[in-house]
Length: 364
Ligand SMILES: NC(=O)c1ccc[n+]([C@@H]2O[C@H](COP(=O)([O-])OP(=O)(O)OC[C@H]3O[C@@H](n4cnc5c(N)ncnc54)[C@H](O)[C@@H]3O)[C@@H](O)[C@H]2O)c1
Ligand SMILES: [Zn+2]
Image: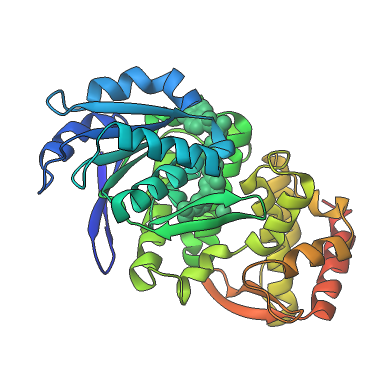
């Protein structure tokens, strides 16, 4: 079991990570400076079916607990589920010292975090993440639900009291979810840690290699990287944008493919290849992109997913992004591995990069 501290302006909190970490939850809760009056677990129903008993047994017996199951995955991040949770929270007479526990992947964590942020203008919560992707989403305090007009458009910054990350939960993830979540680890390595990136390329050759102590090591490194960025820029006015590496093009591929068909991280993997070509175009980035793309493909990533759509379709979605202005599109690029920066790309530049991407994709 390891502990990583996340420092933000208002709060410093631990991420406890390792096999059996969930067993630490009772002692953490009992040692909180204001002991919770009541617990309210918001659980992804699929995760509840697998591990609900395990979490139940790990909670302190002396504090009453209510549970609210929510639909598995992304469909939990809706207004109707949000309302349902708040209704049950009111019916359960939660007060300002009650504690919400988010139990599931990034979707359940985002929903439960937002419920905690909104209930009585903010009550404490703990993240108990169960996916690889959640090494990213559970840390940093961004919470949100979706609006029919846009993903993550309704939300708040609300930091958890702790993140209790039991890596034993990760063994039941599907290969697709494993691959998808690991793309965010690759992202963290590319924007901040060349050595980690090299280690990943050495150790991972197929999705099955994303497991065990190597995975745990990568998750810890990824959390440390995210923690450093959040410490510097909690509210995303500067360097936190680096975490969007691969996401501008990736989000477009995800949206055009229909959410869920190409998983978020799979689309981000494709987006990272595009961003690397853009980095080579703008900054002569010294990096073997075809080798990287072929390596991702071997690990099962749909590296060519973007080529299913025309440049105009992709460009249209990219300009609808929260960070696009007047026809240019904001991109995170690298000057070298571990050295990101933010720049605005014109349509002409993007079109040239898109052409190169399509041409080279024929070789992967
Ligand atoms: N807040 C942030 O900073 C942030 C950052 C990145 C992503 N996100 C959000 O995270 C969400 C994606 O999260 P995710 O990839 O964890 O997906 P998810 O929460 O949708 O879970 C994916 C699927 O895996 C299942 N699952 C979860 N844990 C499992 C386990 N241990 N074993 C078997 N199945 C399991 C779920 O039921 C679901 O069907 C998106 O909504 C995204 O917007 C938030
Ligand atoms: Zn992401």
